[in-house]
Length: 128
Image 1 (cartoon, rainbow, N blue to C red):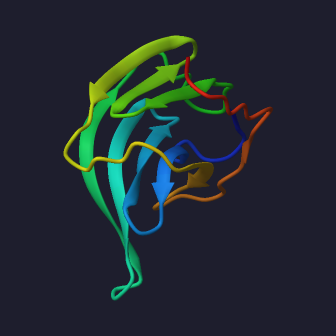
Image 2: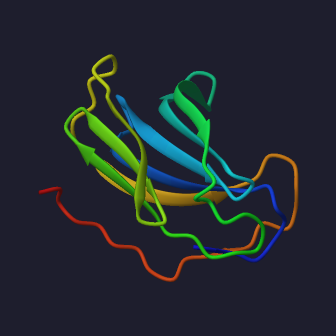
Image 3: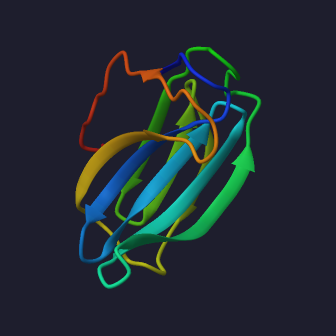
């Protein structure tokens, strides 16, 4: 991904998505922070509820208007975040029990504009 906008936005990588059970979301900010979350849609409130699993920061994230390569591994309960070719965090997540589902990507910001992020490519493959 390449950030072309403000310095505080998030690129999201999603795995094990199931609208009824929830999903895992990896949010990487171009200011150096990252979060791994469990998310679930609340149909009554018409909103997503997030439960943090991991919060951190990494000097591997190229801050500002820069290029970054992000990846995740979601294999059963094993989750890993990869930033610019290096695994920065991994965990076995058994509390929510998501083991399969769809994948997705997204871009967001809570407080700054413009949000302009370019995806050079997206690759999805089955973990080995």
